[in-house]
Image (cartoon, rainbow, N blue to C red; front, side, top):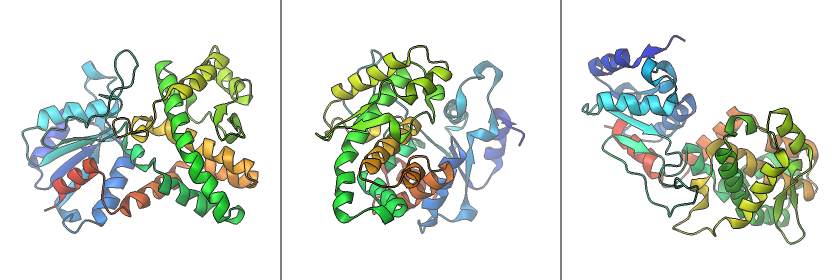
Amino acid sequence: MAQQTVNGYVISVDIRKKKTLLVEGNSDRRILRRLAANCPGCKPENFVIDTAQTLKAPEELDEIGNRGKVLHTFEKLKQSEKFAVLVDREWDGLIADDGSWLKFKKPDDTERKYFTLGHSIENYGFQEPHFVQIVLSRCYDGLSQDSLSLVQKCFEKSLVMALAASKVIAEERLITRASSVFTYNDFAWTVEGDVALRIDGDIATRLLQRGVKDPSALLTKINTTYAKVPKASNSFPIPLYIHGHIGCEVIRCVIASKLADMGVTIPVVNQFAHEGAEAREASFREYLAGLSEIPSSLQRALDFISN
């Protein structure tokens, strides 16, 4: 599909009668459309949800990405009451310039410019009930109620490992290279109920093949950071600080490692750890749609497109 210039898009929005919500990508649009289907005031004939993937960045801002394109477009349309945007917060206000974690504060939303509470929209799914439900739906044949409680107990550890991996991989500028690099076999659980990355396992080889010069040092840094993650609290809600995509991969692989230790068959473990993006997104959409209270940034977006 040919991309439209931002200036051309601005003209299109100006002449529309419908309200327009601009988001970063297709996944975000599908999530909002699913939530809108549950919202009595959200009538499809009255709004449009567009994505920045259809927009061409100005030449002088060629490398701003979809998030940047959304925010750039908002500046051109911020006076229009028919236009709003929703973007990932990323780590703005969550990690300081020196790499330290900051006390949690809500993002600085303005009228019709909405940010996710955490790093990205995926972070709303980093909750125990969501992952327990996925485990049940994928691995029910090898689980009992007692074994399921073990999965629940390991969930907090999986979040901490996901945060440690997110932070280190981002600091080393390896987000792209580390994408989909983890497997369940890269994590080892101790008898005391703790978890660690295997330093000299197959993951070191895979990272080396992807151009990471010193994989062992990287993995050691993740384990060290894991040990230093602050305890979860209202001022430090761990699920909101995790990188959306890397975090989801790590959480699934850490839990899958526990499932393997519990005797769940390896094909089922791998299915859970490496489920396709479409299936993961579908589960996430339904989880959000089933919540009694929609996350605040998503609710504001729904309020905007409703009558």
